Length: 449
Image (cartoon, rainbow, N blue to C red; front, side, top):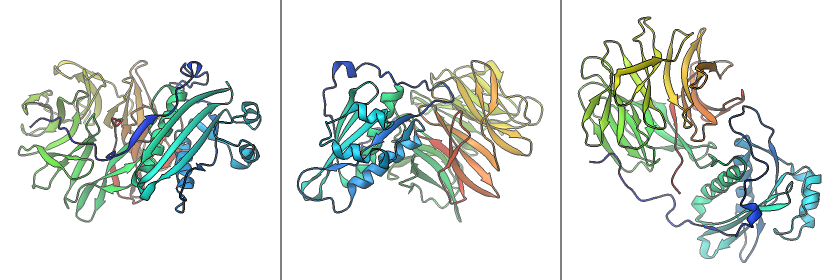
C-alpha cells in the first residue's frame, strides 16, 4: 500500500470560496506596508475592524456576526503582526460611513488606522449557512486592497474566518498566515497517551485515538492529511498512521522491537524512522515500496530524525560523541553516516529533539541549560546556537509553524506538562493546553485549499 493515500476533503464538503472583487491594477502590486519576517522585532500595523453588517432577509438571532468578528480579531492579534484599534476610537467614523464601500481614508488615518476591514454577512435560507463578504482597505496609501466572499455551513464559520485572516496576513507579509493550521499532541490519560488535535487559536480540541495504550511522537504528513505515530496497541511499538478525522488508520510498519520517531520526507516518498532490529537504536528509511534502507551504523544510540525542507539532509540525535550525552548531528539523507556527519550542538551536555525550520535555515532543539531544559535554535548560516526560551520550568520538544515564525513546545512546571507557543524573537508565550498532561506537540503544514 502506498504511503501517499488519497482521501476526500471532509472539512470543506460544500464550502464555496470565490474571489468577489476584481482588484484594481494598483492594488495588485506589493503593498507599501510590508514586513520583513526575518527581523526579530517589527512595529505592528494598526488595523480597525468594523462591526459586521447584517444584510438580506431573516435575522441573526444567534449573534453569528459578533462571534465571527471576535474570531477575526483574535486571529489577527495572535499573528503578532497587527495592533487592533479599540472600537471607541473609530465608532463615530464607522457610523458616518453609510456603506461598506464608503471609506474616508483621511479620517481613518486621523484616528490611527493604517488598514481597515469592513464586512457584510447574510443568512442562507433554511439555516444552510452564511455568506460573508470582506473588504480590506489601506488607509495610508488610499486604496482598496482585497475583497473576498465566502459561503459556509454553520459548522465551518471558524474555518472561513481563519482563511480570511490568513489572506490579510499574506497581504502584509507576502506569506500565508497560520490561522488555519492545527497542532497535534499527546494527552496523558489513566490508561496511556492518546493523540489529540487542536486549532492554532486553541479551539476545536479533538481526540483522535482511543487506543487505551501508550502512543508516542505524532508527526504530520507533508500534505496535512495524515498523522503518523508509534502505538503499543498491538503490544509492540508499531508505526501507525491515522487521518485527521480519526476514522481511517493503518499500520505502516511492524517489526519486533522499536518502530519509532517517524518523520515524513518532504516529497512523501519516504519516512525516516528509528528501529531497534539490530539490538541498537538506528535510523532507517521506510521507502514507498515498503523496503527499508539503513542510514546509521553506530554502536551508540541514533534517534529523532528531522528532514531539511529540500529533502537532502537529515538532522538527528546521537550520543556518538563519546561524552555519554546526546548531541545534534546532520547527515546526508541518501548516504547516511557513510557520508559526512556534522555535529552542530555544543556548550551543553544534553541536546535532543531537533526540528528543521520550514525555511531551511534553522534547527530548533531541546538543550540542557543548568538544571532545566530550554529551546535553542541553531542558525545554519552563522553556525551559532541561541537559547530562545526562558522563565520557570523546562521547555522541550519544539516544532515549527509552517511559516517559520513560531515554535510550539512542551513546557514542564511543577510536574505539569502543557503546550506553549512562542514567536521567534519574542519572549512572550501563549499557553495552548491546560490539562497538565500534554506532550510531543507537532505543528501541521499548510492544508491544501
